[in-house]
Image (cartoon, rainbow, N blue to C red; front, side, top):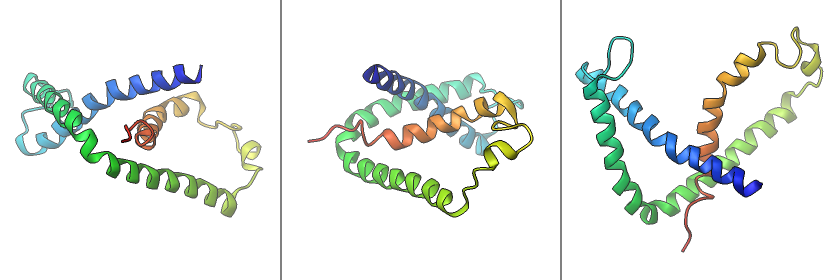
Length: 139
């Protein structure tokens, strides 16, 4: 079951992150060109084409760059993991108050399930960034 969950998380990460990165680059380029996005923020046909071209350019870069950048990614991933562990542990030691879990109006989730579900994309990016060094091939 653990391997199934890990494989599912990897599939989601590897399928959805490249398009998100390509669209983020299109948003950045649009700052200078002003013709890749509509006024509502939806990519135009040209913007979608630029994003698709960026994804196609990422494939060989990622394929051949894995060996070259594996050590760097591993080092940065370990550093990020250490930071991600130090910060919450340090905050819990410094300012943890158990009464906050039940003493607030609204209980444990004062803003309801909508606030919890709106944090899922942020958690996905954080999870994907810290687990990248685990999936890197080793020599």
